Length: 366
Image 1 (tube, rainbow, N blue to C red):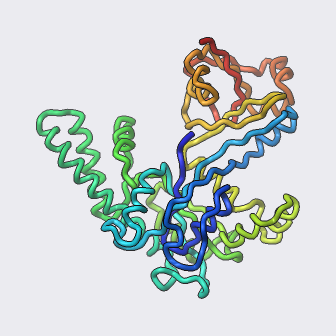
Image 2 (image 1 turned 30 degrees about the horizontal axis):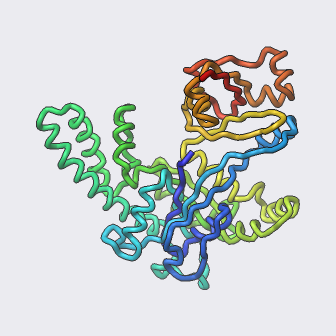
Image 3 (image 1 turned 60 degrees about the vertical axis):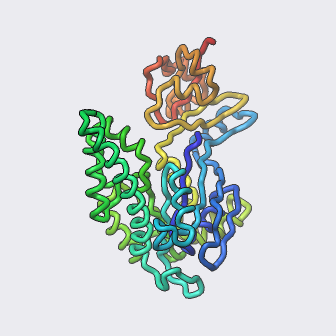
């Protein structure tokens, strides 16, 4: 899959530190604004205990996890929509992403400068939102001008688009993001997707906190929760500085011990990667055998032939049927042969909607 999440936010909020923790790439990180200029792209494995358990049962020659692409984008400042700072580049880079990880600084540290002089995550969020909203308003008004003329000429599709655009315009003028406007039907969902509006992208607010707030958050996080209550958005709490220390620890047992000392069950980076995967509306199906256990990435709602095509285009072109084992059945019966013997293997056709965690084999003919 070529979908990717963009890490965005003001300068010096911890974007590059997080990127370094989760990515195989190494973004520069320093205590001054605009440290990141060119967007850094990295691909990271998606932690999945289900794949580990399958590999433990199959003992394959190799195990291949799913992956997700993360982009570290230059910090944004007021006036970006008018070209201030690295605004034009920022907006172009974010337009190319499919979802947004918006990092907000939720910690005090006099040794780390803030571009606006003091810590206020809600204000920081509004700065980024406003710049994106201004750009979206330009896009919406431009499309309204064109579609309005077509609608007046009797174009029914243009009239439908105008109705959606007017609702977007109303929200943007009120200082709200486009994601607060809910499409009325699947047709509107398709139209909304084709508009590529910046504030309509799925978003997760990543609250970067200090060590003491890594479990329960703090007053800054509470303020963010209140500010985004009317958005279709998630919030994740993470201590980027601590995560960078965890990333330096070599052994698994030593990392777990360090996490336990902090009162954490798992690394925040693990949760962030998994959340980014789901934010992109992705899910996993598996192939499992003696040669290879592998996690494959598809969109939620994809049908069996589409899933087959992820493995090889010929599988989709010549799709005949899919043999499907539910993950829980494979774990319970411990082998494909035992699942077959128990009558738990399903035979599915072209209309089968793949479920997250399905273990699949495809029959095809080309």
